[in-house]
Image (tube, rainbow, N blue to C red; front, side):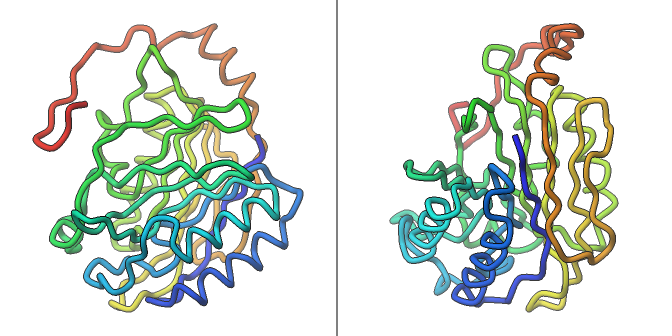
Amino acid sequence: MKIALLQYPIEWANPQANVGLLDERLRAIRGQADMAVLPEMFSTGFCTDRPDLAEPWKGPTCQALQRMANEYDIAIVGSLIIAEQDGLRNRGFMFRPNEEPLSCDKHHLYRHGGEADFFRPGNTRDIWEFRGTKIRLAVCYDLRFPVWLRQDPKNLYDILICVACWPTIRIQYWDHLIPARAAENQCYAIGVNMIGTDGLQLDYNGHSVAYDTRLQEIAHFADYEEGTHIVDLSIEKLRHFREVLPLWADADGYKLAHNTTDC
């Protein structure tokens, strides 16, 4: 499975510009990757108090993402602001070539950044399959909560992907949490963050990265590096490693309790 990590600045509150720039970036890697991973809220930046930027699911931005997935034969993973009847959602997505898109809404809303005041949480812990690979998506703040992302021994996932707008001032946590999730879940872990300065004058230095479950770094972006790294992940080797050393089989059983979910 070849996955492209796209680290770049996001034009604040400008969906049209961001969708156009994504189209250019995906066209440049056409035929080189199975999947492209974008930062969180790729079309707007982390605009938590801008309901005017929300779109319906399968609205203009979603239509553009589906067109790009079809045209470039690539799955596209990220998140964007979606308006539902019951409120706003920070919706994680995977748009696949010539298939219906997959989605899950961010569960842990970042209270300090105002997200919990405007958005509603998602409550599903879906595992997506694409080209024989099982994938779990985390949206930014979800990364801090290991129980939410814990492997289910009955339905293992191969790759944990975290899409984020994670500022420089707290990047030390990001740097440690990505490999921690790879180790405890016996999976590949990929994190994609934005760079630059957003409309609230928050600074982002990126540090997008990919680890295997042995904590070998497969890809790493330097501070403020803009560009695309493509990693080639062997799902067969990962599954063989889990068979040889089945740590996942010894995990403690648990039932996740939360006041807004039946998980």
